[in-house]
Amino acid sequence: MPRLQQGFTDPQTGRQYWADFVWRLDNGRVVVGEYDGMLKYVDADMTAGKSIRGVVNDERARESAIIRAGASDVVRFGFNDVLNRTPLLVKLFEKGVLRSGARIAQIW
Image (cartoon, rainbow, N blue to C red; front, side):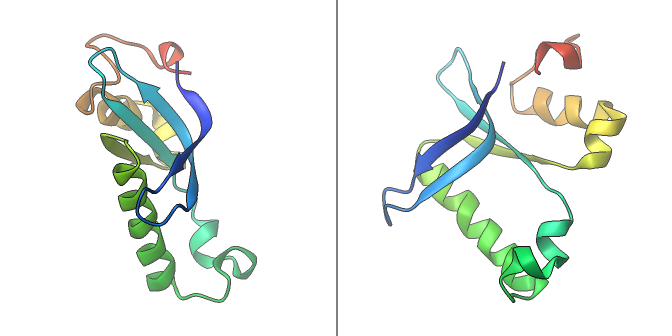
């Protein structure tokens, strides 16, 4: 089961970031799952006046900070991945969160 909204502190900047989903695997790896909604790229209330490119660059910097803070990997998924299930299951399987034959009910 993932932990929800877990904080990570960037050791370089001291800035705190919150991850949507965090799986701590038996082998010590920490996999972060990030739900990517489209609004954060286009809604003026969420972009702080930045262009889509600026928002994407901020997301890349955020992901790098989470990795520096101890995450082994970040899995990004969107609405269609969740709705269709198989794309999400494949992404989580590839990162070691799921074992072969797992069902989505086992990760939520």
